[in-house]
Length: 85
Image 1 (cartoon, rainbow, N blue to C red):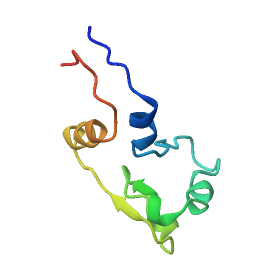
Image 2: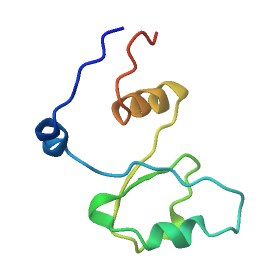
Image 3: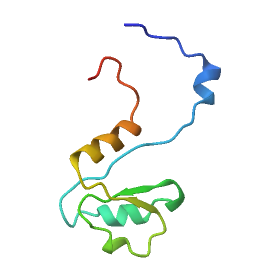
Image 4: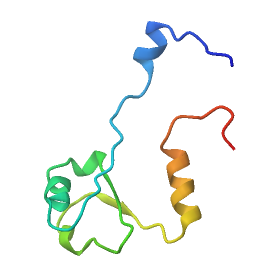
């Protein structure tokens, strides 16, 4: 496996941001937490057509309907995995 050394300049020039997901059972505050997030930098991943509760929130949403669409989106939002099939 080849593991390149990343210089401080390269690391500092990288686009930064937190990527996270909120999962949980009904009623524990997932929607409340989403409503506290900045709409300009937050994407709502709507797996269950559950956006009625966030009707007034100004962020963007995505509604994948197949497992392949979910996999494709996950592939875009993760670091490359060398050797992964």
